[in-house]
Length: 307
Ligand code: G3P
Ligand code: CA
Image (cartoon, rainbow, N blue to C red; front, side):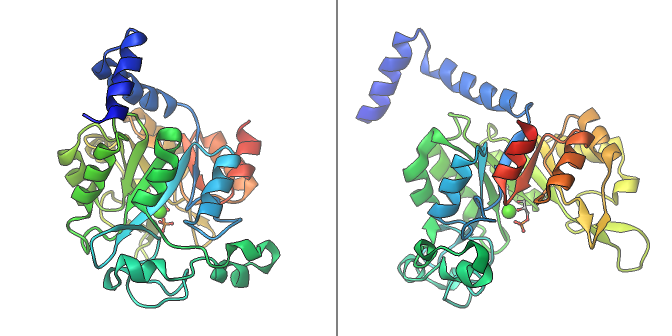
């Protein structure tokens, strides 16, 4: 046991708590907090600063986000890299797949300058030269001072990602401190995580779009049928492993879910966290539907509405 752990245990005993009680309390507190509305900073405050950089995370914290949303890929040398795309081209000055580069090569890239070119009205010269971050970097900086809403991206391309992620979170005490949700479009990825650590709250992401045959909607991963056809059993099947569902709301300007989707998910014990909601009117509409949180690139806008 290291000195920090020993000190923590001593402090807990002084409060009349055993470490195991404190662990259960922290997890219970996280689940209790999830019953209140949660502001999820999508890639940080990525409307204001380059996504998944310190600037985006710091602004998200200042804007009152409850969770920092992180997307994970892996480097060639097996490190967990926080980046949304499978490739480097959009958000760095590199090119090719993340998994074809070593951590050292990834750290040499500029992950901020692109934002200034893409968003001249929000450009800041301090953003240029921002480095890509590892999950370890983020955890080293924030520890359990923030909560993390971590997406396993392309898990089929990184079969070892789930184990590396759970081992990192456990080693840092972030599961027992109630600091993490794991989200994925991949049910298989979520179920792998659950087998590794059943205490981690999981959220199943879904993506509804028009079916190719023109007949209604379809769900990208096949986790549910079209919203109009979802049964309680479909929601229950998700509730067997997840605490919530994260749907898109609009496709090509048309709603793909409605208030009844939220109500039926709730009736089956699922939280509903739609993505990615940046327009205040849309935020208010979803609040009126009773959603339990939202992913947004503009946490300050959401905070101003929910406060
Ligand atoms: O994780 C919720 C939302 O972020 C899913 O879409 O593509 O932005 O990761 P994406
Ligand atoms: Ca994501």
